[in-house]
Image 1 (cartoon, rainbow, N blue to C red):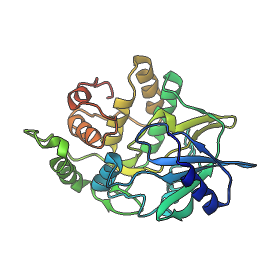
Image 2 (image 1 turned 180 degrees about the vertical axis):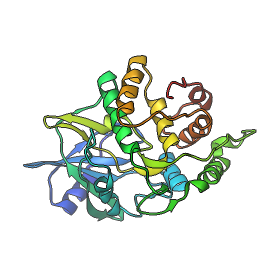
Image 3 (image 1 turned 30 degrees about the vertical axis):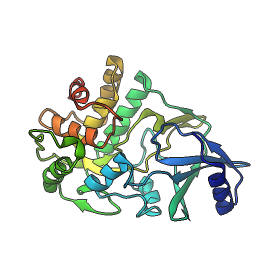
Image 4 (image 1 turned 180 degrees about the horizontal axis):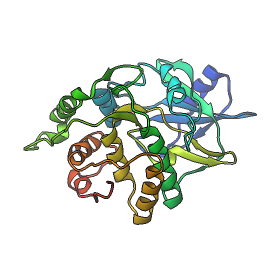
Length: 280
């Protein structure tokens, strides 16, 4: 699916750039995309989904208090707040303004190849998360909006599931032990958010960054990586930067939140529950 030609024209008029529309990678993609024509091309991203209609962004708002429509310019400052010398550094994001109240951003165009999950990339990703997890942040939520102490995580997590329509017939909600600490986290983490270009690896899609419990972020990684050689590679990369973390008592509750936010897409809860417990 491509942006409507009329929408493309409106963005061209708004930005003063001739644009080449790009197809959506997924049916529920959060942004319409264009490449500017001419020298020094940019990638333009116009918000396509709103928390009222999108399960992921609704979950980001209800659980983490983050709405990118509410702070579109401030989101661009997140990359500069990340730890330095990441193996997969973020591309800078620029806010261009609101087109009929819809936020529009740009970032440098990269001709790099989209990452694919494999042993090489899994090790890089392990090193990336290990670097991010070395830095403890002051609480969980969103650094540009609201940050809560870790003591409030169990209650808010239970409330999120209690009011989730998919949990209406659950007899018992999972437990949420107090997390050990909070770290930078990208809840919708996927391999295709990273590119390999002539100048090296870059992180091209990071706008959903939040502060989250360490155990939540590791449970996301555990579900993302499936092959045994990729798991070994991820652990090798992670352990060079950060120590192992025990997920046992956290796993069921964190997976329930991941399922409720549809971070794994339309996956049945029993299937997500039964995913191997391979990470620490």
